Amino acid sequence: MKDKDCSDKDFVTDLTQDGICFTFNSGRNGSVRSTMFEGPDFGLSILLDVQTNESTTGQFSNGLKVIVHDQNTFVNLHSGFNILPGTHASVAVKLRKVGLVLIEL
Image: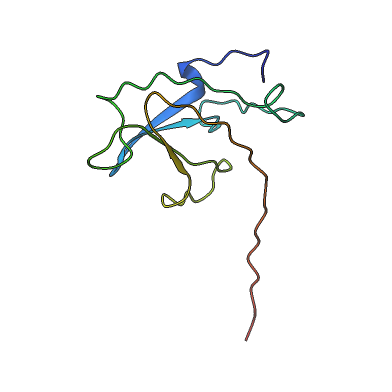
């Protein structure tokens, strides 16, 4: 993805009880980005300009909460990690598929 620039059209916004959620690559705008590569040189790299008057990780703090998930899946709001303004994070993500097993009685 390093050779493709993102814009505000790659994000979908939703108002939640915890603030504004900006979802990247949701597919709701008609396209889904993908890459065959991983790592800091070829994977996803996002630079965000946090406007502290517009973002929050909780009722009394500023920053961003980052949750990585597939499109059209349940989002566990208690997962993820926080990034405070003026800091950076380098994160490795690994796909883990979880299935539901139905047992007939």
